[in-house]
Length: 182
Image 1: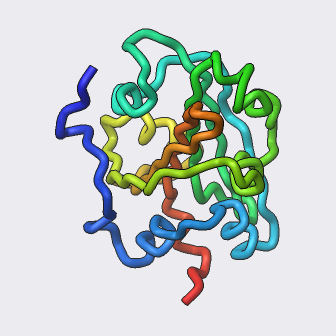
Image 2: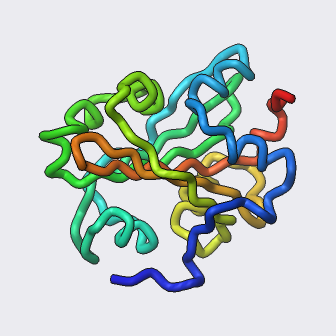
Image 3: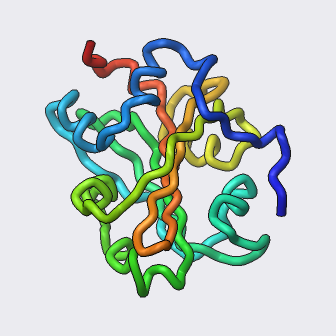
């Protein structure tokens, strides 16, 4: 299934506010970055199951409509504030191969696993301003008291042994309360 322009992801976050753009463009481990900008960091798992991927994930993951994938969703919390909603998608067959440890992460950070293995390759980021009609927007807002008009997200594909894992990170309004480094 071909994804058309309304759901397109872009190679640069050109319209993102400056204070969000700094977080969006940072290429190192987001886990380590958030840990450095808070006293208490934790991963809060909220969903993990075989489920349908979002329609704009089908092409990049080479999935057909209706085929289930392992979907894992967590909130990354800094000082008990949800600052990032992270969503990952992997084909079930790859849970027996390159990504076999993924289904047992629990409240451990996926980023720690991804950035400690030198064999894992990452594609450049794609960016999108999520609006309320996008399924990740609604899920990201579940723990927010005030629902924003939009949220900025980035995604990239991690590959190990030619097996892809798609990671999308949705930046929540509280990220602005963390001090971005100069």
